[in-house]
Image 1 (cartoon, one colour):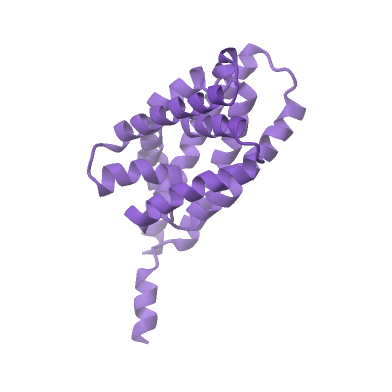
Image 2 (image 1 turned 90 degrees about the vertical axis):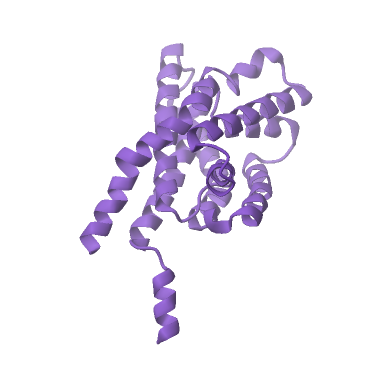
Length: 230
């Protein structure tokens, strides 16, 4: 009986709500990346890195995404496995393929979009990816392996505030992604499609915007459920 009680105490409150927030958050983020690709004005920093890697390495994007994130997974596992959970594995195995499906579908709906439509898609993508990230971060059932890097640096290593650490890690991703793209034979004129105005916006505003949604949306949703249970 004591062992059963200990196990129950280790389970987080509102587990069902947290799982739902984690799953919804990851799916929302995956869909947003597909929207970014339609905008073709630059993807978010990590996807900028992935786009450069995808251009260089001749593998299916979904598989390549799993491999790249598996490497980051071991980083998080070694330094602070607290950030590894259900959402981590959902992100690891599904996000790449959901993004692939979303982009393929949107291409059939939004054919040859104008600059205005692309700009609207960009703004939608920025807001949606930050909204989704806030939900699965607040759920605290694990985050994406990339998000874990900034969280470990600021929370585990105590090396700065999240929003500023996130800006630095995002900039590193963009620089590496563009470098890989050029090494793979990409043309300089095509760089804005993977590292453009959208990338700049997300690199500088994604951290603060995620924190905004954490404070004003995700945490209140979770706290409201906690109060109801009590």
